[in-house]
View (spheres, helix red, strand yellow):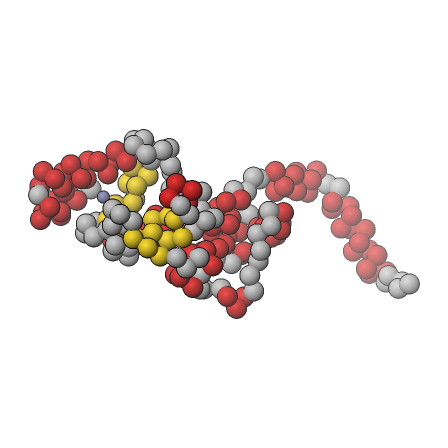
Amino acid sequence: MKEFSEETRRKMSESAKKRCTSEWRKARSLMQSTPLDIELVKIMYKSGMTQKEVAEKLGVQQKAIWRCMKNNGIKSRSCAVRNQYGNKNSYWKGGKTLSDKGYVLIKCHEHPRAKQCGGYVMEHVLIMEKYLGRYLNWFGPGHSDTEIVHHINGNKTDNRIENLKLVTFKEHMEIHNAMRKAGDANVKTAKIKVG
Ligand SMILES: [Zn+2]
């Protein structure tokens, strides 16, 4: 068996002493008690972010993300498949279709709202959530605080982030009422009204 050097033994005893300080214990219990939103970790990681980026965004150590993923069976990917966005990303599962209301739908079984729509989620919702790094607030359809993604130019399939505006259900109603009043040709006026 390997003998530890004087120096190593000194370091080991110092580290043991440090672990006994109340600050260290406090810091450790604080870190361990910080609840991590598993679903958020999953969506962020699967959208192409690294564990380190997810950790930074959530203000925790990378190790906490690693532990959370391990405990919840979220498979880590190899570095090679990072940055595979759009339909190349495993998160999007490939399936893309149009809803009967003219919205682009993406097959995304992992999403909490996928069940409402046969495993599909509206693409503009996914794009906004990816941009925000969180799920939209959802209190049910028609709830005034439910978050909606509005298409600024009126084109429901134009899901570029610059064409998307995050609003509450109430604000969205106001936008569309104003648009109706101003006439569809004058969308800009309606936009200014709601700000
Ligand atoms: Zn709208």
